[in-house]
Image 1: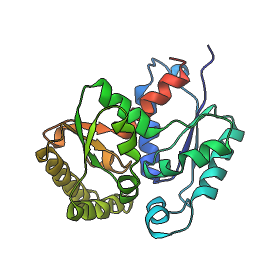
Image 2 (image 1 turned 120 degrees about the horizontal axis):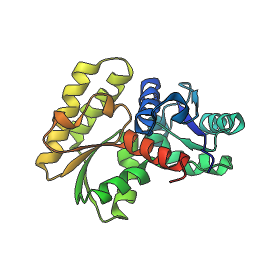
Image 3 (image 1 turned 180 degrees about the vertical axis):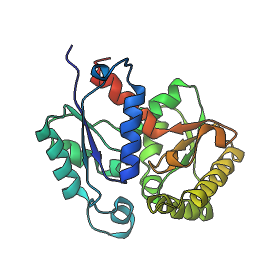
Image 4 (image 1 turned 90 degrees about the vertical axis):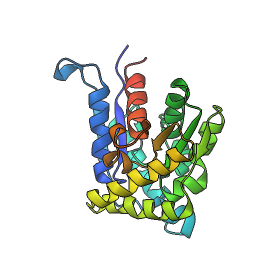
Length: 229
């Protein structure tokens, strides 16, 4: 079966896009260059802020998301992946605008959590992702309970997410660890790194329960589809 070409609708943010690309590479069974998958990336950081659009009436990112998706389709991508959790609020609009599949990060992550038999998970994500219920829907459908940070912790976490985008990694990592431990103390058996900036600052070894990397879950799902598995 011919391998499929992956399109990455990126730029949200640029470093998260690089992280997804690398995780696709690392998740691909390969012993030489030719064993790897073809990946087309459109790194478009000019896409308007997704959380601002969802919660505060900011500029609608849909036109830019659709334009970037169509660029990738024209370039030859067989399906798309998006390294931004909050952008999945607009997933249906993107999917309707192209004739190739757009994989869903929440579905990939929820499937992994279900497979691992985790009954309660905490969510570290942007305000837009949390308040729009993107993970709540996917997890509830699989019988998994979800715990979110307190309002004060969520506010600090949101600042930390934007801190990562501006290169402030040390302070942001401390906030992410504290938020994760708060969720674990509230009963979470694992914590979802549900914003693509968070896996850049929070790893499994940083906290007392597993960290579910949504970017990695999406990368693995992309590799499986590209290989026809």
